[in-house]
Image (cartoon, rainbow, N blue to C red; front, side, top):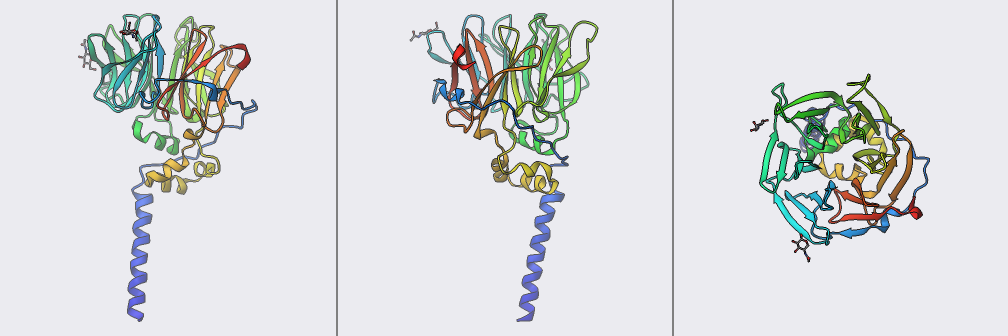
Length: 359
Ligand SMILES: *[C@@H]1O[C@H](CO)[C@@H](O)[C@H](O)[C@H]1NC(C)=O
Ligand SMILES: *[C@@H]1O[C@H](CO)[C@@H](O)[C@H](O)[C@H]1NC(C)=O
């Protein structure tokens, strides 16, 4: 009897030790505590439940959406296809890239698209096919987790690297770690060279140019803010806050025709599980079990987009408060008085008319 008890408790102790080692010693994280976004004073509505669904069933999690000057809509989906919708509403599988990590896309004035591949770097996709523009930074390091890109009128490409530590499929570990591993990069086509503009950013995500191209705005997801980076004038090279205390984590950002910006905002934490972000042991535990990550991520339970004027004030906010029709909305792109909404949790693009009744 006695030997069995001590053998059993010895076994249990060994299990407990292995479990603790697994969680703390082999944890992929060295986390900091994370402040969560303040509760929004703006009322919640259900406008995002009124979308028309484009390409339903044909689009696997269309993260980003752009419309070119001819009115052709483009998106990149999870199996590596760049798909497009013609003006007559018909969809086409346009170009295929061997990747499951395509994120931000931008139209290029020479025609075609610039595409962020979170594993390969920056690509150019045109009728002629796919060309790799950049895989490395001029300091020799590999471009990690390219997230979103914009082309300026001189052909320079400004793009974000969300994290140099974690990849796209582990993006939430960067949120849990809450340490600034992100970069803002610039690709110069005349030199075929990529340089670092800013380092130590908090999951930089969307990037947009102002109408005059005198500054760009980049969003830092788990800081709930977007910053301006001046490209011209006396403040050239400096940053300042464009908007902070957003009602969630900003994802992609697009310039609207009136000079304001559309920002998709993510619910970073699940309701009731916010404490995880304030507890290092909980972060280690969650990071060790992917099933727990799914529980803690709040993004699939809600959708919000905001319109922010050039002075940094929110003028409109559209929600799907319980994720009934749209959730995990990552992009809002305005074209001809409609918003086109991309998502990492739908099989369609949402189309919402921008009329006076929902402003
Ligand atoms: C729609 O437009 C595209 C591009 O012009 C064309 O290839 C396609 O056949 C058209 N489809 C229909 C149903 O008219
Ligand atoms: C530009 O640099 C990339 C590596 O970052 C290389 O793969 C590509 O061939 C170069 N393109 C040209 C036109 O030299």
